[in-house]
Image 1: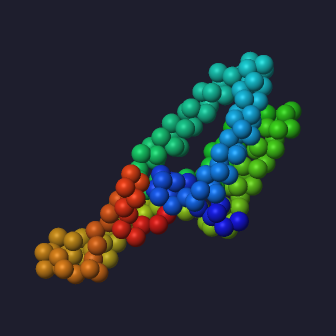
Image 2: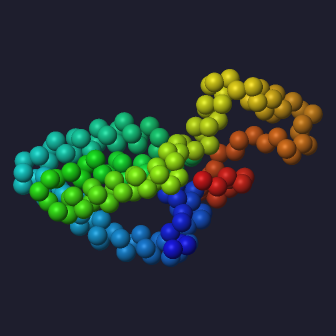
Length: 173
């Protein structure tokens, strides 16, 4: 389905998502809300609500909060499947096992088909290149500092995508 082939990032959602994808997401909200409610209700009735909420919040604090503020943050479906799948783990509730199976399927599909791409996309690649002292980065950085290349369009500074005005200078996550 063509309209589902988009990523989850602020830039994509604000600037690229077609209206059909928004309708699809809005249609999924009742199902997702119901599943969240069922998980909370189950945890409450079994006296483990505090443990499950703390578990989810600590994981979000370590695995999502440090990455989310970056304009390059891209929530890959493998990452989402991994994150949610480990929390939907009530063994005697079929709907929890179904959510876990679906999420692990997302994770396996994402890794198998697309690879384990970093969630910070270009920012992570740039960091690795600079941090590891890749020689081509010296040329890039020198060219950016060299005023004689001011009219040379082959050397462009990495421009952060701006989801607020949809400017990204050919950045496409």
